[in-house]
Image 1: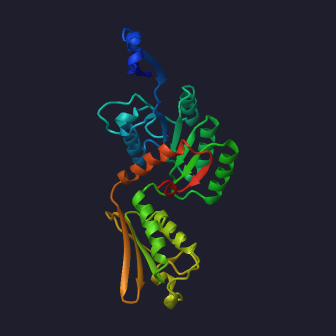
Image 2: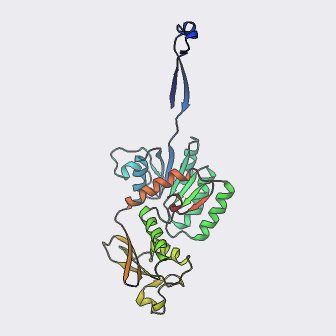
Image 3: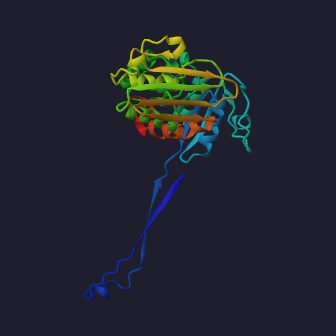
Length: 304
């Protein structure tokens, strides 16, 4: 598809001495054909998951991108549009072979991005396959190991290809982390309280990230009671006294609160996640930015 760009040029000169010579010349039209910018072809790896289905809908609605492939080991062969309860099918079947989907998309020579929503053990091979077919990746896989990130970073540098590894896609969570870092310079007492519906992987990735950020500042917190029994006062993730308390009850929203205190005051920062939809603005931003990368970037906050 091409877009026509037309410019009208009329050889009329307002200088009177040339008026009689040129006044009878007709206007001319010059048209040039310019290729329109194609959409980013997005492959959702983990498309049958709740977050994968939300990602399919978000990409379909976003400007400048489209779902070009759906990969998962569940509901193989079914149309991803129907799986996502969309009004119209997307005519894109779920496939369980990432390589086959990558090969099909690469033949179109379009800009492609693989969104990896799988699991830590598969990320390295998935990103390597995407790079082999000339595509950048957005990885949102909680609990990915740092050695995997380090290995991928070296591979991306060598291939001059981009990859974004995002511990969180929630913009609100990132803002909470940044606010906690700012507050930590003014308070010496801090504790993190989180609630989750299920007891898996606690402390959560969000709480762990906040605790690690505060630890990296080189301060010691809660000096007055740092020797208190850990089991009674929450889990200490480092040697700096930052504790994380995890409350698990069915029906609770995913919530993270950071409490700071000083003489005569308490300062609290809170972020609640009620639906996976909160991750979609961050995902769309990540897809738009990763196509420009030539290396690995860790953390969506680098783009905010």
